Length: 191
View 1 (cartoon, rainbow, N blue to C red):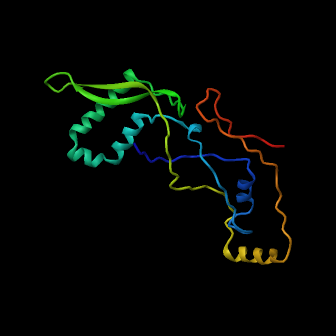
View 2: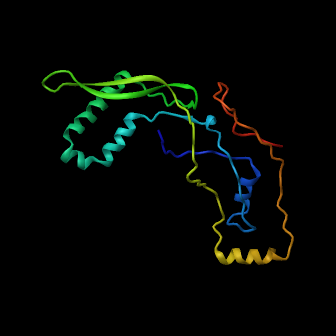
């Protein structure tokens, strides 16, 4: 089943990314990076259903008031009964490991008068990523907000002068090829 989702990959302590902040706006040429994503190195967390439902209510409040009184009653039922049986943990789980997730939410009518009860199922689930396609890459990078005239003067200044870019030793660490209990190292300080 194809699913689109946004992914945040924090990268730091690498020369290339230091170069983006030190030499912004492609001042001395383009900086390029190639990367390969290991899908087993990701973690996920189930969305808090109450927060998600509250956002849905705020977005669609007028439509619900006019046309969706049954939906509104169901939302009210969910708000009142949810915390009685399920506690949201805000827990992250690594892809490939077992997690207890809400797999089904339903509303069961108890009496003919319309009294309803909230039912949900929690099951152990293993999420995995078999195939993936990187559709878009974005990055937040700091810059000096220099105007074009300033950048042109700097390019002209360094056109006939040597320019030295400091470097550092970069070590590559591979992510584990499968789920681990020890977690993932994402940062290493190199002296």
